[in-house]
Length: 248
Ligand SMILES: [Zn+2]
Image 1 (cartoon, rainbow, N blue to C red):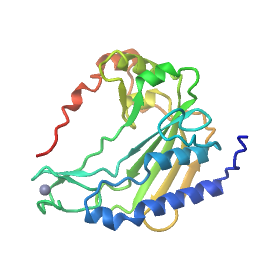
Image 2: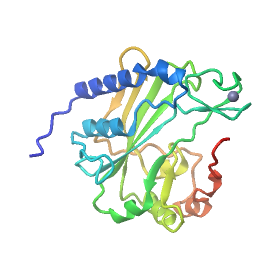
Image 3: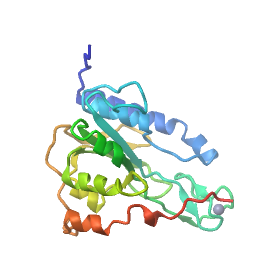
Image 4: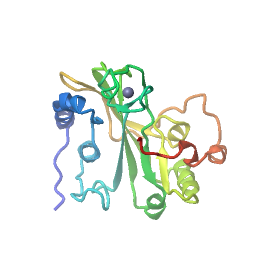
């Protein structure tokens, strides 16, 4: 039981190449139908983490742990649809004009976050091992971008800053932390980089860094000097995101 496959840098590379191929296989159809595009969906993201950490997924998709080693997988993909400033339509990342009104007046959107449940975070404290956070970003933020940077960090589930964030969030009506990649709270939660790779539309994936055991956190950028208490006091707890309304 629990006989795990041996993970080597080779099989990680192969998996990333297949994920890349799968993502771009239907790209022309995604463009044709103006369908939002993700390079790595949540199912493949969990599998990527299982491969990186030499464990298994749990076969359940949604309930229980994401991986047998009690990791929690989250993904944020920045190949986000743009907003047409003329007709307000959403325009998928790889289109240069709005398919509804033909306008090229498109606004970049880069706000996708990792959703962390404050209730689960507090409930499984002491059991949950770590959050594995994937971020996919276009190298250039425009429709003709051909290379995408993939990074995975790990944050300890018992990190003090994250704990304060979960405790604060849990007092709000919404129990969902909208954890922003590369934000002050992200850096203050001591993320350790475990994977840094480039995924091109064509050609092979390039792994620039892979160390699933790295426990040295990313340096806190100098512009962030507040204490956890100060950061928590300043948070708006999601109230600044506005109401989501359906476009007529
Ligand atoms: Zn439009």
